[in-house]
Amino acid sequence: MEFSTLVKTYLELEKTQSRLEMSAIIADFLKTTPSENLPDIINFLMGSAFAPWSERELGVANKLMIKSLSKTTGVAEGRIDGMVRDLGDTGKVAEKICADASQTTLFTETLTVEKVKESLNKMSDLGGKGSQDKKMAYISEMLSSAGPVETRYVVKLILGELRLGVGEGVIKDAIVSAFGVSKELVENACNLTSDLGEVAATARKNGDFGLKEVGLKPGIPMKVMLAQKISGIDEAVEKLGRCAFEIKYDGMRIQIHKSKEEIKLFTRRLENVTKQFPELVKEAGKNINADSAIVEGELVAIEDNRKPRPFQDLSRRIKRKYDIEDMVESVPIEINLFDLVFLNGESLLECGFSKRHEKLKGVINETGTFRIAEEVVTDDCVIAQKFYDGALAMGHEGVMVKNLDAPYKPGSRVGYMYKIKPVMETLDLVITGATWGEGRRANWFGSFLISARDEVGGFCTIGRLGTGFTDEVLAEITETLKPLVLEEAGKEVVLKPGVVVEVAYEEIQKSPSYTSGYALRFPRLVRIRDDKGAEDADTVARVEQIASA
Ligand code: AMP
Image (cartoon, rainbow, N blue to C red; front, side, top):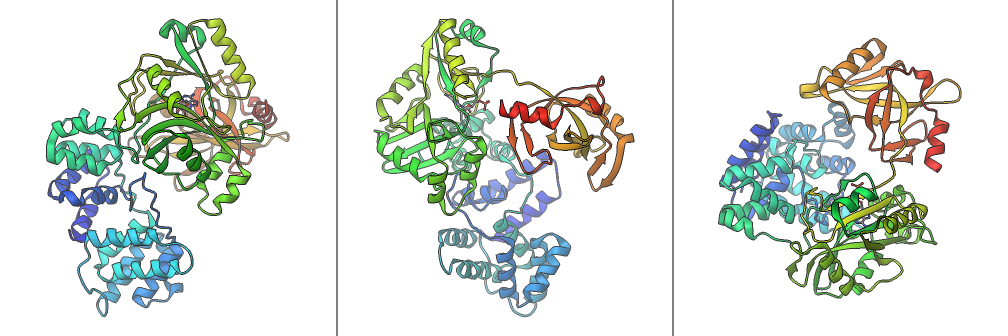
């Protein structure tokens, strides 16, 4: 397929913000896309060179792109750099300079989707000395067979700057309408396998019948089952009777996929983090006694005495792409396994939790750092409460409660698994800045910079609040805040501290991003405290106290 055909679709997509129109444009395009191109086309439409769960990475930053452009067109790097700074869009700069250059030199042959894919794969295979030069050579090769408009999109694709707003939902709707299949079955298939290309190809080839056959596949992540909230132990026992209470570890949910000797690790957001945790790969390889399996667990960064470390330490490990062995030493981890959904070629999704758990115990060799989550199975509230109190005393977040008979429903929050954690103390914080909303909410502020008081009557930022507002509340708060605007730059405004909001959150973390030195994780509005003024807001000292409790 010619790359220019894809570019035509990119150009159409750029003209609209409407999800409906986007999926209609994509549906038309998918109908004419050859099946073998579907996986790449779907990734490219979503603005990514590879599927999110792929281990592949391009590792091309703006600087290398500018060098490559210079090499391809003969235009000096400094000049391109200046143009990028002026236009703020490397793709458009590439188009401009290639339009000039193409009159004299470029354009050797037609660029195809296959050629782009092949070059991207080769680039991601490179590593070590000389790899930057080789990457430049691949980029040059692609650009010299691309017309100016295609150049813009090749560059954006490589840099990950396409931002067309095409998400998984748009693609799923497009598959439904392109191939006339059931929305529910497409949804279900995408929950079982994140391979949207495969889902699209199946929908085209075998319709609803084929989609029903889509199942879990070791090596390709599934969407995980989510938990609902429940008020406490009593409600859990009342609802579920005898059930499993497990420690709720505070870390990152990981799916371990074993297929023959190969181990892959995925996060809840389907990112492939296999490279980042070589010690876990080793442990899983040795201690999952199965030919193939999909196991779930919570990965936690720990101190020597197994005390959980703050979540940021784990984030550091996820983000680290080099010198990984140093991180293995400096931030040790353990995994607490809690489910098994696939074993030796068979899906266990339809089995009840107790059966899956029994099988989990049967296939895992536990070690100090490769463990099965601690649990107690009971219908006795006293025993469960003791377990919960013990979990909190050990520094864990709370407990998870599991319905013993319930199957596993990928991608759903169906009430087969609940979480119990202590209710967080809320904070009263002052709004000191805001950002204008977008689309339907363009006339209201959309998110708010929130701050705590310091010792000397000033205010220190602690987070951005954008959750928990109804349209009415947004309209109301915008009217209240408008007279307090001190400065406005683009969509950002600085506000005189005057409005206090009560904010709930998941956790307080240390953070250099805000002037208080702390950040609220998942802050959400509880209510506007009309009864409080800025001088009544909580202080940074109070934040510190809660954070260290
Ligand atoms: P939340 O993120 O607050 O909705 O809580 C659910 C999350 O708790 C899950 O997605 C897991 O990442 C995590 N978790 C920790 N321990 C367990 C456990 N024993 N069973 C299931 N999930 C757990």
